Image (cartoon, rainbow, N blue to C red; front, side):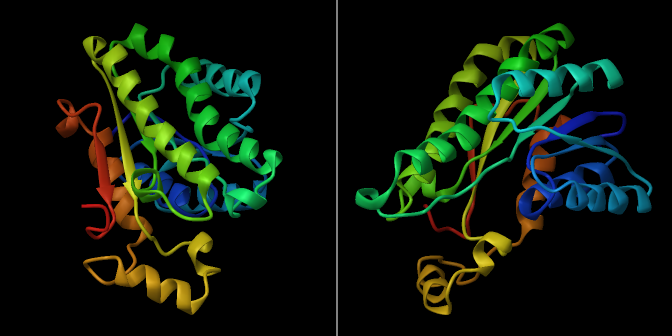
Length: 246
């Protein structure tokens, strides 16, 4: 259980982030539902959590902005006194073949997916060091492990998240802070719903379990890594991908 824990989940208004927020709240955590664009969707997540008896608050922040990320973390510490769990989930895609990919699209994905994670960790690390406790969980991707044609920016960002996770784990481990990455495979979300049937079929053929995963599969893994039971696990990449990357 995560009773009385304070959790920040970035990009929590939809998809995997939403499921993570709902799951952590169901286990007792007070969840800061971070969003960038859609206040309405974030408030829906908060309402769902509250209807189930949980505690949550929606807070807008573009985590790719260094100063705004600092303000987010400062606000949470001021309001709640601590941050026990940070889940860096915020992510975007701007897919294209490398030869056709614009600098703008490359930078946008790196700034949100990788720099956003750095920003949030940077700005909460001092507080976690004071607490001598904390769980940092970064959402990577099977694409960051295997690579994927047409996703040079996304793959680079998610591979970078893995390197960031391992470095942070080494720096903070002695103070009781763990840092791990979860690498989802193909998961049923809004992001994969737009894929053509042909693309979905081809992807399924690469998965030993022969089906896409659910957002709950990811959320359950995150909840475990956030728990006391995972206290001796750090610097790891947990693939939740039906065997795709083994």
